[in-house]
Image 1 (cartoon, chains in turn green, brown):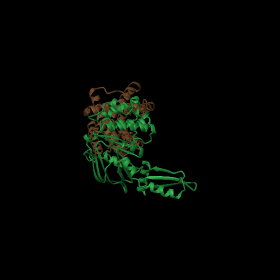
Image 2 (spheres, rainbow over the protein chains, first blue to last red):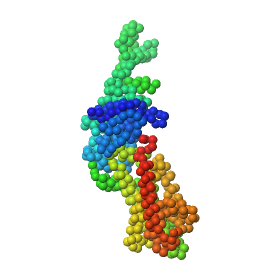
Image 3 (cartoon, rainbow over the protein chains, first blue to last red):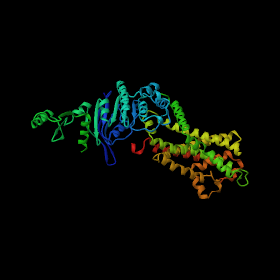
Image 4 (cartoon, each protein chain N blue to C red):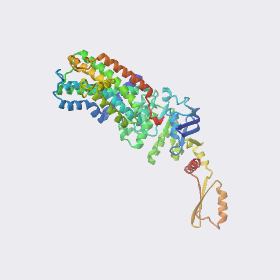
Length: 280
Length: 266
């Protein structure tokens, strides 16, 4: 069953086309990563799905409802973690979680929600005194306290140090195991690789890839990079046919090819190649 | 999920708790009328108004209670809501299944709480330190209650309506504070209304503060003073009608202009 169904979504801000003819299907229970550089239109797409922003065209269904007309019972099934939040500063972690739990019919237990996000030690700390990572985990706690079927995470780990990011990923893994459908926007490729079952790459408001993290790597036209030394200079050639290329290269040298390296393109490089190609 | 009345109760408690955690709000908003009484009371201490035997302090307290309605409801909401719109509070709430009325009930509770605090502080300090006379009958206290309630409703709704025209808390503050000050000067708070130029009286008579202040004088000044009013009466029924009309008008403006998200986030 599809949790989200988008067909031909378009959104303009004045003359600027932020999202253009965007299609996406998200199956219930999967984690989809929406990747793309800053300003690609990720947040616009997600905020249309969350019922915040209006659209100029296309058909959108989120948990069976058009998000342009949100209802209370629909909101009860959604969890939203916005890109940036500076509210709640004067509330403690427990007060905030307790308060939002009241709005949901199937709310989780307050203490176990706080434990789930690893803030038990900080339960009586005011949000203003939390670190960036802890503050983000409070946002996630508020996103999941209502036991959502669908959770939106908009760039949840921006500004995290690597350790905080790994702790956060563990949290998302736990939610995935509970069967929550997750829409994750990020500009960290390794994050999508670690968490997403399905990745969508967006640049300039258009979808340029819709595949699995592994599939993204294999989409690259020039999969392998061959490096060697010639005339005291490091040379590099990207190729889809490395064996053939190395054979030709070997013919130019007598004996060993100096400093030969054959390296398969990383996911990151494949992604950057895709973004660069579609931005030109 | 909690039932609606219980959601109202918990949101109201949360708003009041937040108010008390914000020291600036406690000091400036809740004690402002007391500071003003201290300053004006020190300057005009024994000044009597004409030959009525009523002190300026007594006249001023009625105006300060009316101003308190503007401070606690109008100004607090006109500044607080844009701030919550720009810091994401409203976005989070509207993205949750919270019934929208819960938010407004919470705001109204915070305004009422502030007003009650201001009024008690003003009347207690006014009575014991400045010899302010308190109403001597139950019916006058009842008048005080309905004037306060209607004044709070009108001010709060006007504050919510006003909140839709400011980008953030700072610009709202820059807009709302002069508005309040303007009406305090022209509506019989800082000066005796009957002594103001006719045109100024006419302008102020369109707006709520003049009627709130005059109705409060009906509670806190002797009946004989009514002859000193411009209409030779405190005109309580007329004040009720005008404040009621402003409440309705403000509610309609809110109905059509209130937005949860900043304009560029929709």
